[in-house]
Image 1: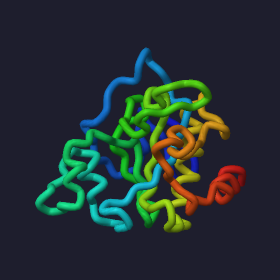
Image 2 (image 1 turned 180 degrees about the horizontal axis):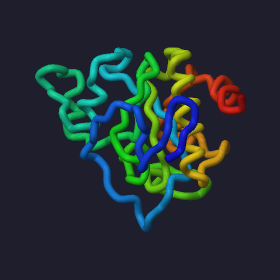
Image 3 (image 1 turned 90 degrees about the vertical axis):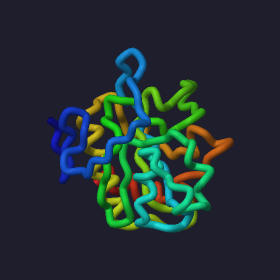
Image 4 (image 1 turned 120 degrees about the horizontal axis):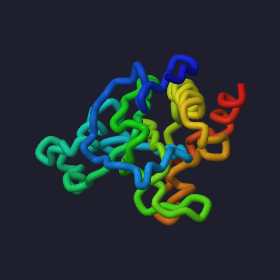
Length: 187
């Protein structure tokens, strides 16, 4: 068990986080351990918050009758380890020792397939909407707990989706305050 701030990692799960198990996960190859944290931004429908549709996306429950603008997502099979909503609440979809399907075609420090060795953290937001103070507080505490639980992670191993897939992804976007996160992690 690893305790850091208000979060602790117990058996590869964040104790106290809401659970919503995604079927979109599998084993990491060759007992690979987490070495990278990837920060994402998500809102469904785009620009709307608190809809519950991120749960539906990660659990393959998008209903095109309810949300026709998301019909193209019905066949997507994606997930993330965590979601931090606008109020700072955390939901866990995949245990940290398993591979979540969040990075897609990606590359970090010459290594392909970042899903194999990364932990994905979604922030409810958009590229252009400032993230909330509650999200930065939760994200900082979660990253500290992950650093304590997984010694292979270091301060240079926190990146945006845009950094590992720059040709196709822009999140968490220019609204994400990397300096604010760094100050929180160094405090």
